[in-house]
Amino acid sequence: MSLTEAATVHPTAPASHPVRIATIGAGRIGSNHAEIVARLVPGASLVAVSDPTGESAQRLATTLGAPLATTIVDDVLTSDEVDAVLITAPARSHTDLVVAAAAAGKHVFVEKPMAVTLDDADRAIAAAADAGIVLQVGFNRRFAPGFAAARAAIDAQKVGTPHLLRSLTRDPGPYTADPAQVPQWTIFLETLIHDFDTLCFLNPGARPVRVQAVADALVRPDAKSAGHLDTAVVTVQFDNGAIATAEASFSALYGYDVRAEVFGSGGMVTAGSGLSTDMTYYGPDGLHADTARRDTDLLHSAYVGELTAFVDAIRTHTPAVVTGQDARTALSIALAAIRSVETGSAVDLDR
Image 1 (cartoon, one colour):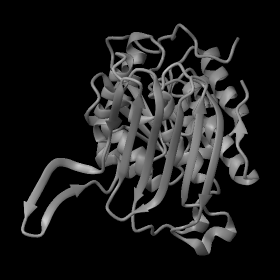
Image 2 (tube, rainbow, N blue to C red):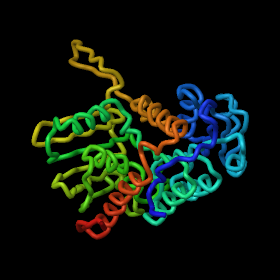
Image 3 (cartoon, rainbow, N blue to C red):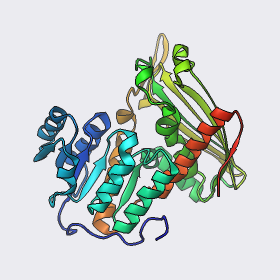
């Protein structure tokens, strides 16, 4: 079978029943996703929480009314009471969990990155295709209203031929994490990978062909010798001629900031901001606007949208909106960016 998602999704539960979902990982994002499924997604029911820390699993399950809390992933994968899983465990475990869940016949929503090597990405895609399950990857910006509207304008030819694209992620500061606890290349594999997917999403039908990256430790210069990078800019060239940039920083003092821009022959669209509301206060000291400090606040509706789309795909027996192949493309850019930093040269992507 080719490494593409199956055209037909096999049902695991009657469409009239709620989709029974288990969360694998009860950390910050896992807890956020579990709460959304339990309280905000129509046609879904949270039935289990798995986490290596039993106390975390039990606390989240109790809070959200899930009947099962366990430290053993196989308890979820072998349960006849589970139709689908949300994989929100550490990134390096994602592929093995996708493969195991697919083998057990469970539909899969996996947080980015789906894999950290292209071989693992192919393994996950093939496992999902062989099992006929929905495999959706957590690229939430596609579901944010502004980003979705930008894509609609592009599809309607309002921008014309894309010439220049830009996507950025600036995590809120001040940066307080221990750099020694941050895996090397996180800025590409777990932060900028969102931007790489955004650039592809906003340049539909185009293929990335060349990548060049510059990265440094500007927030924590003392950590650079250990391989920690906290600031990066990546240039991506596409086969339709468009030139794109992606940038990231781990310390934006003004809040969490996510934006994108597409400039073309017919106009320009922009999307995103760091504003938590569209209210601006005009006072004696000037202008003031409130900003979001967490991604789960700024992109709350996007998280709801992506999980709702996942459940809808299961209930309608259709492929996911964001596929494993989408994740593989973003990963290929991230890996090329890493090679570019290592070599100081541009990297051509394999066809």
